[in-house]
Image 1 (tube, rainbow, N blue to C red):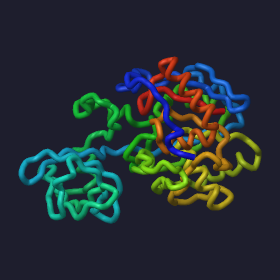
Image 2: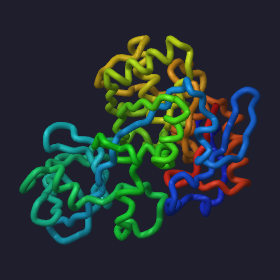
Image 3: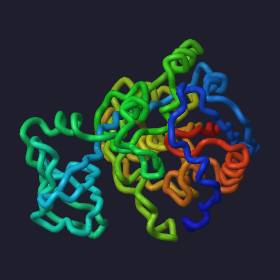
Length: 343
């Protein structure tokens, strides 16, 4: 298949620029896979679609403030977006503007942090070495900004509330550069309702990295590979997942990151193990899903690997029809937007 098959038109004003005041006020489009139907709902009613035997799997990764604003030695403003720590003190970053960042160039972030450019690689990433007066993570936590997606056009430097709102309420494991956005709708009330029903809540960790939102740069999807991302499954949660599979109970993934983790883990070992590993799967139509039975996800960018994954799970035409319905019904799109439950 071709990435151009995954295009849809919609007015940009449907891109949610702000989160709703109450997380669970989001709308939820319910997509049934057999037969293919759509229904308009509210996320607050999510527990109504569950069974007491279900296992709901959350990604508990925590976003760190990976967007840094600094200056060159000549005083020019430089923005760096931390992507991945390659080795101790050496990071792959995205830079703006990157044109003048040649090896040896220094970028200064106040008195506590300086970065020196080591190289620019073919993927457009700028590799830097960090020199700090203190612990790097503490400094970044103090001076960094929430790495909101570029389609959020408001003045991102002035919204302190994003540090809380662009984070799930159950985030606990620091390491993501983007939020697992399907989880942003959950509230303590919704989680309590799930548990009171008798359903089981499990957690895994996948640190959302550049691979999740990296653009697809080829038209032929057979040539596309999503970059690996780090994940961890604990012993108790592995046991919960294995028991669900052996008992024939549904596993409901909250988000595409959770989906990629679970499908990677099961494909590697034919069962879930307590482990730290790398999610390496690139999921495209034709993929045989073995781990998950239902999926909660936000609405994704046209021609993105996330839209491809969702279409692989539910079918391209049903998803395109669901997106057309969402556009006509004025659903809110992307990170701070509404969600879709595929069952």
